[in-house]
Image (cartoon, rainbow, N blue to C red):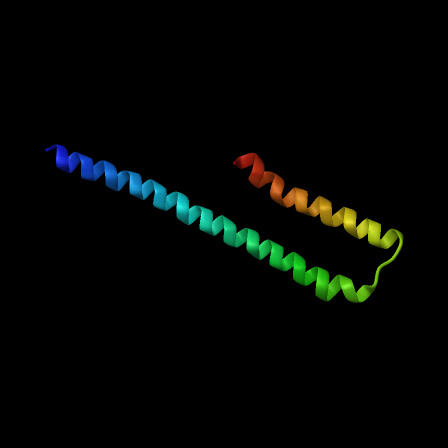
Length: 78
């Protein structure tokens, strides 16, 4: 009787760890996708514009605000 209970506890624990692992992988994939999109936009769209002065400052401020507004809900949820 105790063997079956031990196996069921082990199965439940492994299932919980599997859920954590899969959700961590999915979260990491979305983060990698976000970083990739930011990199592509920066190198293919913004870099050819050759921004200087206030335009570059405004772009940098908006990039930082976008990064914070994207990651803040995730951090608050966690």
